[in-house]
Length: 418
Ligand SMILES: *Cc1c(COP(=O)(O)O)cnc(C)c1O
Image (cartoon, rainbow, N blue to C red; front, side, top):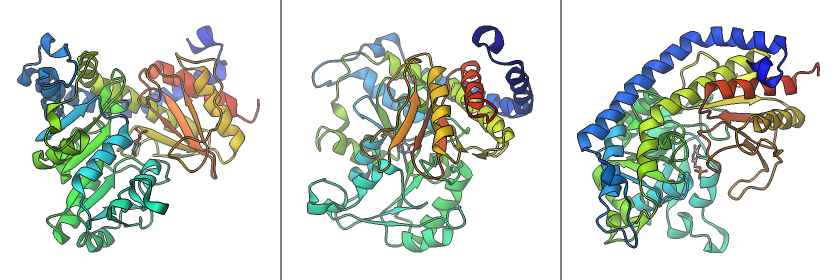
């Protein structure tokens, strides 16, 4: 089919067959997790009595929006939380994380990052800014500390030692633009236990971006008190067009609700003029969409490792997220791989990606994404900071067949024999 429809060489088609054979066992494991999570989500819908009338939405303040309030409960049940805010009013994952940090931390408190510096966009949220104009945590008298990785792994001893004087421990599940592996739920278990042994009061907050529905449980079942993420990644199922969530212990979610809107109105306001059907449908489809993304990720890992590139995670390594990092070592290959992904996208296939100064990031970022929702990285996308070692982060993929085409074309574009 790749040859007939897209003119790929017989050699590439043969390579695809081999990679698919190599991935078969891994794909079956992904299907097992998908089926379990699908039933878990179905149960959350059925037990909460979701009805078509909950899709209607609301206007103005949104007082008494029954669909909004029920979605919070369904989402909470789906991720094993006491309570949740699953809202279109979160503008991005960074915004949801920011609301959670400001909701949980108070002046004089210390935020501790468990695995070195957190995701790039959080740098300006956390640090004290020159002149204090930014409104960062630092400007409000909240201190920051981090426990760097030790040999690429969480340093449990150091985390425990620093946890004693911290109020919130931020644990980032996905790797972001770093070389470390993603954390699994088993890692959350170890990190939370170490931190809470040293300080039983500490709040363990997971940046759960890209991790939802990758395993049968979420970090909340493994010591995290609160999890935060974006709806244009995994839990929006490629249907949600915006939004984010905060889920976990009810008292903590309440504090975040007061920060999201205003103390006093908390979770009671926020209208949804366009209705809530897409958020419900996206959540329902999320386990299946995440499975497709996981298969795409595994395929990419197998393909590029076969071609001799350094990949992470390795094809058969345990996964904590839907990302595959491939080190290209030079800007040209990175750009050509991104262009091939873009060319193979359903939307904007005629665009050519160029590196640009994205707000919130320090290096220029090149980003290939031809998505139905702008910036949605549950859909197949590739991004990379333009810096050594020119490592691309491939993520998403809502159709394995389309992902295979894109990755085969990327392989073709970077092969030296062209
Ligand atoms: C995507 C992501 C975020 C949030 O990014 P937004 O682009 O603001 O949604 C935060 N942390 C990690 C690890 C992420 O992958």
